[in-house]
Amino acid sequence: MKVVVNGTPHEFDEDATVATVVRSFTHAPSGVAVAVNDAVVSRGDWETTALHDDDRIEVLTAVQGG
Amino acid sequence: MSLPALVEPAPELTVDEVRRYSRHLIIPDVGMDGQKRLKNAKVLCVGAGGLGSPALMYLAAAGVGTLGVIDFDVVDESNLQRQVIHGQSDIGRSKAESARETVKEINPYVDFRIHEEHLDSTNAMEIFADYDLIVDGTDNFPTRYLVNDACVLLGKPYVWGSIFRFDGQAAVFWAEHGPCYRCLYPEPPPPGMVPSCAEGGVLGVLCASVGSIQVTEAIKILTGIGDPLVGRLMIYDALEMSYRTVKVQKDPECPICGKNPTVTELIDYEEFCGVASTDAQEAALGSTISVTDLKEMMDRGENFYLVDVREPHEYEIVRIPGATLIPKDEIISGRALAQLPQDKPIVLHCKTGGRSAEALAALKSAGFSDASHVQGGVTAWAKQIDTSLPTY
Ligand SMILES: [Zn+2]
Image (cartoon, rainbow over the protein chains, first blue to last red):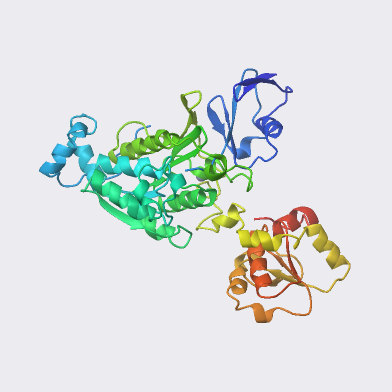
């Protein structure tokens, strides 16, 4: 399945979830938020949120600066 | 989603104030009513740094009647690239005092209150209680979680912003009407993963871009106009020059604003974020053992004294067999030192390794050279050695 992660096309298995994408992008899931099609998916739902063709996924990292 | 105005209007504006705020007064959505609300409003800005500078200056200029700032830092030359509330002649001065002077020059009608202290779990609730809304301009994760939790517990809107290099994020976290900071980021990145602005740099003007979003949101909430940034995260990319928002929902499992909150009072945020002091890091160097090491020492029947430096209520939840409870503060204050054996090695542990490292530093400086602490604490023990134990 083809999805777009942070603006770049990526290929994932058909059963990929939000958690799959996070694992492939960062080894430390803490401090990360994920939006699918412009809506943030709560941490507890990552494993069960399936992805679909052409989903736009945004992996966001918490920053502390101020 | 529009929300009612947070603040009631002040009884009246003086003639001088009408002249000063005329460009607000002739906007129908603000008008006399909105300006009187701003006059009556009490806004606290946490930090007079990068975001705090434009935030305080524009909040003052807008006519927010009472403006507070918490900062105990002094102005450094390297601040001036972005912290525009301070100037060349302020180097070495208190940031709060310097901010007061600038604000007074911008708008003498503002009642400016300074809190020159380190914001922590012991004073946050009391300081925040006097304000209607909190604007966050801090530069570290522990304070951000502290401010979030205090705002959730007090039911106050938390106008949040954070910046790094060319990227900014902003949102209004308000548990009564939407998600909180923990709903978006349940916990911070591991220590050292995400550099601070001091380590990674920040484009100075980014502070103005994000700080002005925060002030805009504060004004909207105080006066009840427009759609506040509640339940949405603003993502600003200065290189692309794009502003985008994504929806953020309240997480029913959120530890502080969810259905079954586990955080019901302020906690130790340095520990939550895994931030260790330099002393603790030095003490832990070469004196850190894993839970597997600990288990092997036990199995070999080694003679050592295991100390749990957590609090009694945590000891009640879960403990490592054979550990004696001596809370960290008892060790750091020196009160408990007499209790400790001189003739055998001492092993300290806590929940995840932060407090035990602090206590270890205190022990070593008190002359206990044969002391170590357990990496990952009882949480690692419960995950790796005895999985029947709960973690919390
Ligand atoms: Zn929450």
